[in-house]
Image (cartoon, rainbow, N blue to C red; front, side):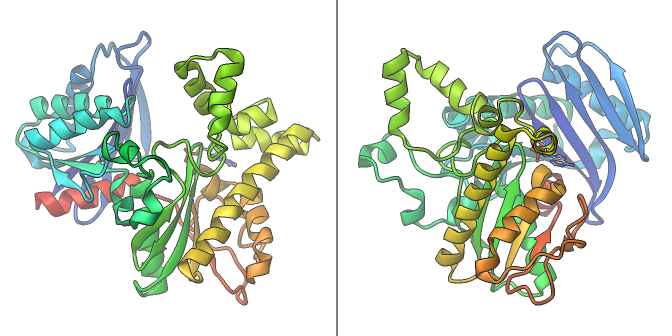
Length: 392
Ligand code: AMP
C-alpha cells in the first residue's frame, strides 16, 4: 500500500512516500519558498536528487507538481493507489491523544488549535485542503506532535498559576517532538526486548526536548505550553524566570511581539555565543578559542544534564538514555560532554563507539550502569506507520 507522509510549513511542503507495510521509501522531496519569489522543489528518487525551479504561488500548485512527479516517474500509475496521507500537526492541544482520520470536525479543531501554534497549524490546514482536492479518495490522517505527551499526569502538565489560565485559556504543558520521542522510545524498547522500561529520550536539534518515558508512555517532558521551554536551544532561551519578561518589557518598552521575537529568535546558543545558533559553528568557535562559544556549550550541556538527572529521579532509575535529532545524532563532543557529567550515576562513555554520526548504536562501555544509545529519529516513518494502520 502506498502511503504519503506530509509536513506542511507556511512556505514549504516536505513529503515522503512509502510502500507499506514494508516501510520502503519510494520517493521524497521538499517544496520551498511557496508563495515567495524564487520557489523550487527537490525530489529524491532512486538515490538521485533533482532540483526544479518553478513558480509555486500556493500549496495547491505544489501538490499538483507533486502528483505529476509521482505519475511521470511511475512511482504510481494512478492517484487511487495512494491509500493514506498522513499530515504532521504541531499542536493537538488536549483534544488529541493519538493519530486520527481527518474529517470536517477534526479539520475545524486543528484550525481552532492555531491559537496554540499560530505559525504551524494554519499551514497544515492549507496542506490538508490542498491534498483533499488533489487526492480525494485517500484516507487523510492527522499525526500530532503533542499526542504522545497526553499521558502526562496532571501534576506534570499543570503550571502553578491561577486556575483560570488553564480552564479558560488552555495554559498547560503540551510538549513537542512527540512523534520523535514515541519513535525512538519504541525502538529502544525493541532493542531492550521489553516494554516495562524507564527511558530518558533526548531529542536535541535546533529545537530540543527531553522526555521521561515509563513503560512506553510519556511521564514528563521538558517542552511546555509552547516549544520555548526546557533546554537551551539554537535561538530559544528555554526555561527561565518568568518575571524577566515583564521586567524587561517595563525597562525597554518592548511590545509582546518584540519580546516573543527576542525569546524565540535571538536567545539560546545564538545569544550566548554571539555568533550562531548552529552547534557546528559553536564547536568550530570552541576549537578556535572563542570563550563565548565555550560558555554557550557549557550552559547547553548543563541544562540537558539537569533534565536527565531530574527524570532519573522521577522515573526511579533508568534503563537507557537515547540521543536523537541533529545534535543528538551528530555531535560527538556534545554527547561525550553530557555522558561524562553523568558519571555520578555510573554512566561510562565508550569514546570510540561514540565516534560516529547518524548511526544506531550503543555508545557506552559494557560496565556502564545505564546504556546510552544513538537512535536516528524517523518522524516521517512514524507518520506513515500510524496512517497505514488507519488506512489499511
Ligand atoms: P535538527 O533541528 O534536528 O535538524 O538539528 C539541527 C541541528 O543539528 C543544527 O543546528 C546543527 O547544529 C546540528 N548538527 C547537524 N549536524 C551536525 C554535526 N555534524 N555536528 C554537530 N552538530 C550538528
